[in-house]
Image 1 (cartoon, helix red, strand yellow):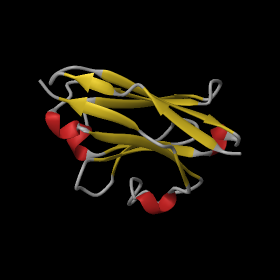
Image 2 (cartoon, one colour):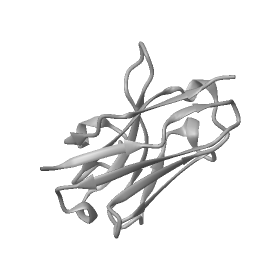
Image 3 (cartoon, helix red, strand yellow):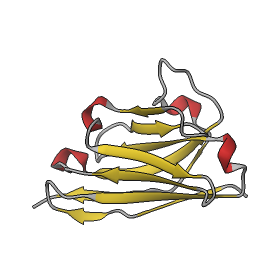
Image 4 (spheres, rainbow, N blue to C red):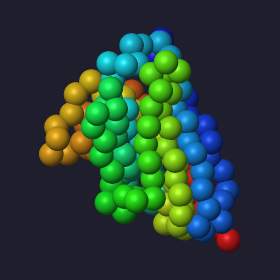
Length: 126
């Protein structure tokens, strides 16, 4: 049974940092591209970052470039999202998801992803 489990969320002050983890099980992790998405209350879900299976391609939402870093450890079936210089507008539930393929023109579109984790809450507030 496929599973994606996120952790690492919490409450942090503006300017602070968090590292999210997404641990996968039940499928051939190294074949899959993994994306991070977020959804704030009253807003649509948006793609934040994607890393392909061998870490050779990485994509970011413009608003997080230079602040967030995605990485993966295929030996541990884990993808990380290091989030620095967090802003109140980063507050959301963050989820990871898997994709077997995606279009380079729209890597962060949710249509490529077939399985999602439950999410972890990130709150940025003073």
